[in-house]
Length: 489
Image 1 (cartoon, helix red, strand yellow):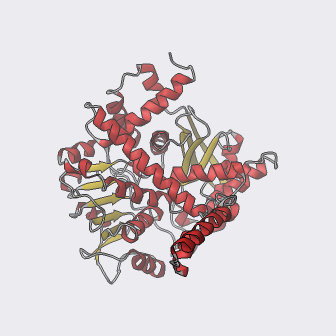
Image 2 (image 1 turned 90 degrees about the horizontal axis):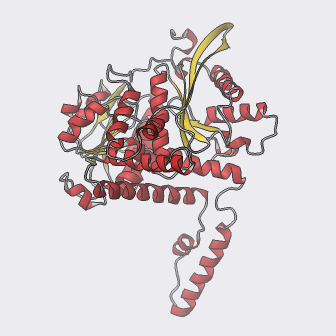
Image 3 (image 1 turned 135 degrees about the horizontal axis):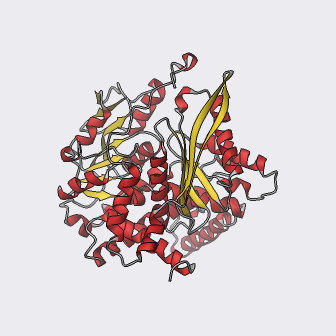
């Protein structure tokens, strides 16, 4: 739709448009077929795991400034081998059924890889949120949620949405309230119908940064494995690595922040929809974020060179490239010019299946999306557990742990005669709060999943790359669930 005059300053066309490439879902299917070919599962079981079980396409009207506008929308449940299904809701004028199906399929495999007991799902509304006021977006979001309630495509034990591109905590709070209204207070677990909510509405500390933090944990762990890196001629360690980030939204910003502050990586470039910035000596992430808050764009940042096309940065020399924007960003057109030694997929499907062949032939180490950006769904699982248990993580044990630590410190001081400083006592005595536990659980999840995938890769000579190993890992878990349910012999 055309930009509205009253929103001229905020409205924009989504310029990260999808290139004319292989359809996203077909790309996912090709990767799936490549992996399932090295397994021994019956064809019927493979077909069941491949397809989307339920696809709900609908249109709904909303009154916008005295006029009725009709919006297209989807909710896809790829697999119900475990319930509830889980997946984000995307608000974008570029969204379509193929994209939603592909993202739902990736969610199934992603959950399986990190041992989150959910089936995969995804939702989308064809709308550019920048072209609407907050009040208009609330009406659109609530109407979308009401349609899901009516068709039983949402609920704590059925299907649990989350934020995605174009949505956030605000939209999740609106959806939770809409669900609670429709269920008339009969469901005590109503707030568990959606994750990614504000803390005051049942959200969990650490959820907002979870996907970007998971990218950091996964990348740091991968770069600690010198044996795995040897085949690519890459030195171990994240410190000092030159890194380019594509996308400076929630995922890209937090990935860059943790890579720089916790890993001592050097962020040399950041690409966004309206341009990019580059400084081979490094960019301070928080300074760039502050510049964008004040100016509405990362372009023009005085401590880096501005590029008119952010996509140019994909082809710049670097140690690690982190595409954290949208799918289909690296295609057969630009893959031959990619110079990164490692591509860490922070977004879903940023590399097409055709482009991946080119990159693998060039010796690029690819950390696949279904593993690396699983931090979001992992912490969403923690939030869901918090909502159905009705208690904040750490509430029962934090003070007790602090008491135990205090008695231990007092004993050490008494036995040795050495006194700890106030700073040391505070550090050693602090019990784990909710954020501490969430971070710890996420870090352990990312490390365990990586090691499991790599063990499978080493054990199966037919597997030639990490994405295929990740798919095989996921297929094994989903297939086992189906067979244990008695659906297949």
